[in-house]
Amino acid sequence: MPRTFCITLRQSPERTREAWTHFGEVGLNVEAYCGVHGLTAGLYTTYRDPSGWTMSRGYIGCFLSHYMLWNALQYTPEDEWLILEDDCAFQGDFREEFAKSYSQLPPDWQFVFVGGCCEQVHQVISPRVALGSSMCTHAYMVRRSALATLLEETQKVCNHLDILLLEKVLPQLRSYLFVPFLARQHTLDGKWPSMGHTE
Image (cartoon, rainbow, N blue to C red; front, top):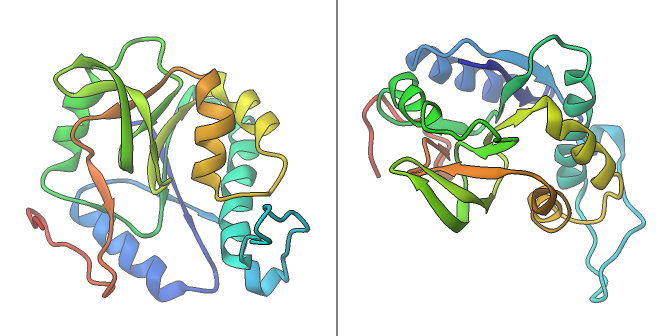
């Protein structure tokens, strides 16, 4: 497994505990990265779209949390990392399934959606990997060679992070996705899936 970080918040300790319980169930060693709580920090952005819509403090906090983590990764020795959000949930034997999908990745990969939604498949590479992109940032892998592009193209906090990735970043990277996805966001009622749970 790549070194794995999960973005979580000091302001939601119960959610953090639930996430780490779940990670333990699937045998995943995860390091906490404490992100920015938008409301506590009093964040806002001056950017608005033509309709007048602007990002909420929560979305800004999420955006900045990923951005700060990418900055920090530059100072770690690894070449690749698995990044999670604390609402990420796995089904079945995640480590085994991850190993199978990972083994089919082309050597040129820079960004991989381990989980996602609304995927766009450009080319099927293997039975478990496709060239393409997706929405959502609850589970993805990133490589050191992608960090400069991520940091350069996401300085303007003007839209949801996954939309900005789709529009500005991923067209410049070798972006892949696991087929099927190995991670989802847990259900709206807050219940975490048990091992082997399916929807």
